[in-house]
Length: 102
Image 1: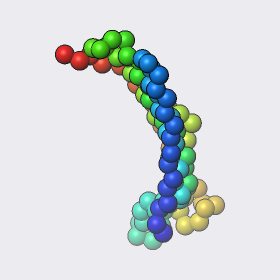
Image 2: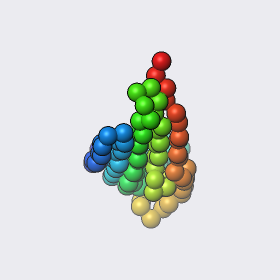
Image 3: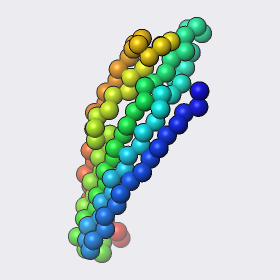
């Protein structure tokens, strides 16, 4: 079964601040064959990401990046959708930084 996906985003840029919010949705996805017998799939999933930059000067910027803001778990099932066998939740990942240009 082919994977289908949709994504989109919105951005904001004003003077020293810029920000982007993006979302990606995927349908159920074929993962692998378990022990050569059972097909495994991942459930449909929605992920949202955020990035922002504050330009302090021509040389310095503060950056912020957030991935998987909704902490959407990866759910894997074998055979049929009612046979859930694995749930992995990495949670949101945040990165802060200072960028300097030399």
